[in-house]
Image (cartoon, rainbow, N blue to C red; front, top):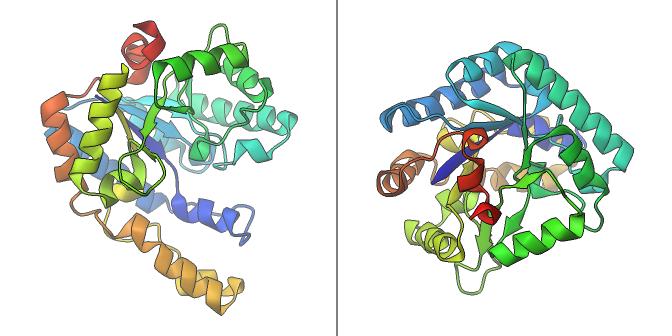
Length: 287
């Protein structure tokens, strides 16, 4: 199985999404603690190396952290600059965002960045323009959620891609009455292990190597990336209380047990390493 990390500052990104600021200082201490928790987990699994999809602003404000992750042998890949929702942006702005983030990440890591994942898996799929920008700058993309190899093949053809490898995250129904779930993120830690087991089995049956994605805040139980009531106050009392409570699903519920739950899957499936080194194994169309 593959493990990848969407390495972002959720507190910073939430403030942008909620209109509280355009940008500001990152919680760099929290990012360091998040990486250290992930690295401790990986060391317990024999020192595995994985892929970190990093936002460009981390390379801008904490280049030493990106350099340290790279020095530990992990792959640095791109996760946009400000965790932008790409399908809400014009094509020219997406081009600027990708170029800025890639340049900053490569400078901090001191190596080429060849992989990309769109924040929230949101990238325009109604036409090929945004995907062609990704193809121009990167060797592979992991922004697609798919439930079958045929779906991946049809999408690749529809986008007219020639060189860009697609490394999708498996998505399928796993809980009766709920929409299809991705294999990873908050779904992985919030639901019982049997839900992830169904998704893993479904991925294998569909011809995918299981690929779990997680975030640094999910490896911490300290609330390092939570927005406090005072930070949410400009939203008004009702929205302030709503978002204060809503954050528990990301920062509290299931976080303490995540390493043990993830470790059980790793002990059975193993870890496949960095995506850049294993494109054929991670690309369902390569079989």
